[in-house]
Image (cartoon, rainbow over all chains, first blue to last red; front, side, top):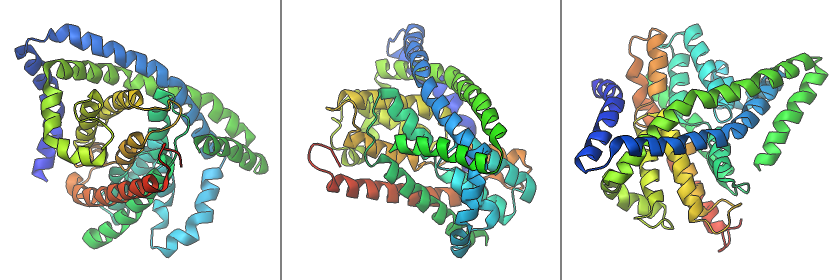
Amino acid sequence: MELINILSMWTIPVMVCGIPLYGYFKGVPVYEKFVEGGQEGLDMAVKIMPYMIAIFFAMGVFDASGAMALLSRLLSPFLSYIGLPPQILPLALVRPLSGSSALGITASLLREWGPDSFVGRLASTMQGSTDTTFYVLSVYFGSVGVTRTRHAMATGLIGDITGIIASLYVCRLFFG
Amino acid sequence: MINVIWLLLIVGGTVVAALQDELPAVTDAVMNEAQMGLETVLGFTGMMILWLGMMNIAQESGLIDRISSLVKPFMRRLLPEVPPDHPAMGAILLNVSANLLGVGAAATPLGLKAMQHLQQLNDNRKTASNAMCTFLALNTSGITLVPATVIALRTSAGSVNPTEIVGTAVIATTCSSISALTADRIFRWCSTEDGRD
């Protein structure tokens, strides 16, 4: 665990020093190359703006209208059957759809139940173990103009469901 | 698929709101969320420029080729249709490394870069290639060793031991990645030669 702390503290500083330093010794004009690559980053950001707005706005409507809450209620018998604490339900549903909502839910669960409670640990594990499928797919495919995504969505959701169930059982085993 | 889900979110949300007499909430969401989406992009544009700048230095100096050669055997198995010395491989490897280390801010720009290169190898520009699907299976399953954001959240919430969930998160993410990659393989076998399902 100490190692993890050290790793998360050192990763970025080591990267931003190491990469240019290595480049410099290899005779790369580091400043010019940085700016050149950065220009590409800017173009990309401009390109993904509409995709981002498309997702945010659709997710926002779904959430604000109460449809998300309704979906949680509909699914709750199934989820309580597999033993998922009801407080976790909104997080499990939102995690694949919206990264910022999921982060918000996790933050509020940690505040309400405490980070060292079972709910807090389970929420943290879930938040840390899967990514926002819907967001990743729309932004990644959107940035290159792919519209037929084939089985990518199904694959992503299978991964998410596995991640949620695995989080629950691993937390039970370790913290239950 | 994305078209249908997107439409369902908007229409479903609006219908539910209408039934509950909550239509103003929908109007509010439309107004605010568009702005939020824009602010989110602006929020990471700086990071995007920074990491793609770094990436360009790493590319020019040959650093990427060196890193690539370490994980290449594994990735070559996973993505047989990407030539090992193609720039796509370098970007994919950096994206996966950034994800493993929990540096999300670096992972996204590198991932988008990888998609650009994969698109160059794609025969049908509108349709996802096998390699893209596998690459995204890795990304959406959130493969990580250091869930940095959660550790930060737990620290700020006053946890006694913020990093105690690292072990459980790594086991859970390993399960989700293995299942996503397995599902991807099965879908791949089921789809026809020209990459159509």
